[in-house]
Amino acid sequence: MTRTFSPLLLLMLGAFVFEYLVRLPYVLHVSRSPEMGNSAWINAFSSFPAAEIIFYGLTLTTLTLLVVLGSTLIAGAAQPYEVSGSGCIPIPSLLHVVAAFTIAAAGLAILSIGINALFDAFSSKRSELGERGLTWVLLKIAVFNHFIACLYFIRMSQTRSMVDRIMFVATIIALILPALVFSQRSILIVFFLEIVYLQLLLGSFRVRRVAQIGLVVFATLLLVSILRPSVTFSSNFEAIAFGLEKIAQSRYFFDFTKLGNVYLWASDQNWLGPISVGFILEPFFGDDVLFYKEIGPLIAERVYFFRAVNGITPGVVLESLLSFGLVFGFMFFGGIVYVAYRLERRIFTGREKAGWAALYWIIVLGKFPLLLNSSLGAFAFQLVLDSSMFMGVMMLLSVRTSHRRNVRPTLNTRMS
Image (cartoon, rainbow, N blue to C red; front, top):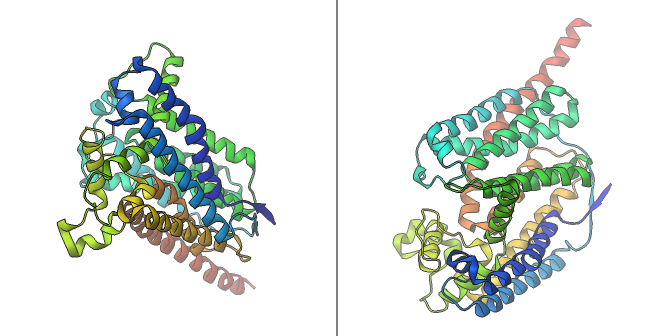
């Protein structure tokens, strides 16, 4: 048995530590250093007084922390879990064929934007791609390498094969490269969380291994921040400093400056509607309901004074507050956290070998960083896409495994 605290709880606590120990000192430095320029000021405070943003932002972040801790206590996630570590279903060699397809999709997605465009703006947001077209389809398939890599992680524990190790590394590369080119940061955090869950299920959890994977994820995030279009550096130190500053400016998870800015802006506006569930209501009410894809560009234009296709996604906390107010918004967010904790416990406390259902629930929980960063609607949309591809892979590999189980006894009987 392995005893561990909830990975979701540790992830969120780590995000709060980042806010208080990294982002807050940086924001205070910006407020006291006018030489940093107008861009840094607007990124942190928009058009509001710095003191107000810091006060309201930290207040909302602290209330969010209290809601997380309250949900933790109610769900029983404060106690360490007993993980059986009973292993996973066998993964057949047919996975190599699936991996070849997803790796090829990653390569084609990158090549489809053109070599010249790739080197001119390596880590651009690629907003010009829109939301349709071949590149979009290839990118979605390429991103699914996060799950293919997970399957190879399981298969490596079962076969100890060098081929599986090589394919595991290849699928990780096929995940990281599109993340670099198309600035898909959140998928790397998703993959990290999934690997933590798999190690617990396999009974192979090692802090050093998790730290190594975490270091790769952090290095990639740093590289994504450094590889900005039209930015050159005189030294590696300057490049790293630039990347770290961009990470401090990022709006991941519980960014207290984003919470403060958008909350103060929204307090002077009419109610924006139930944005959190807008993706459910939108087919029935049309333009009368704000869709989750509309709130990001709205925040970017009205709060931070720039236009972008995707804009600035609110994250589930801010989205909940805008939708239902302070009290009911925090209750809504707390309910989401509670459900995630209960699902996590259900996976951890299983005593039998983990099957496809457990692997699917790991995909669901792995998407939790997307929920914190973006919105409930984006979480649901990406989950539908991943679920569709998961079902296809599961049916293909399950049929192959079932066929092998049925054929081999017959052959052995004939030989006897």
